[in-house]
Length: 98
Image 1 (tube, rainbow, N blue to C red):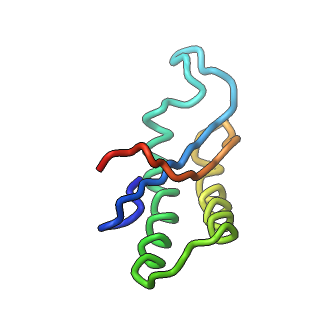
Image 2 (image 1 turned 90 degrees about the vertical axis):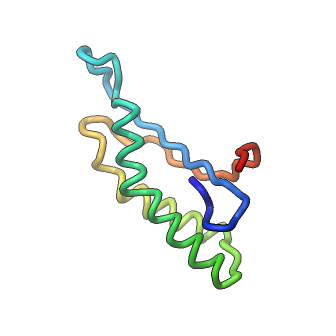
């Protein structure tokens, strides 16, 4: 996800789910469904805070990132049917080209 308008950094939000493979699809959860839920419920949590702090020229510290991850986790936890959210991580992606 872009870190904010006018910024040249990108952040990578990784999501993992765990559960039984659905025999009809061969997936635990369809990747397109995961992406849709993450874009709707998790990305706005980070984007809003990053843009706000960037406009104020403020640093986002470790504890703020941890709080954002917790908030995103809470917003995603029931979005994947019988599968369970098992991991959520955020890292700087220096390899992304603008």
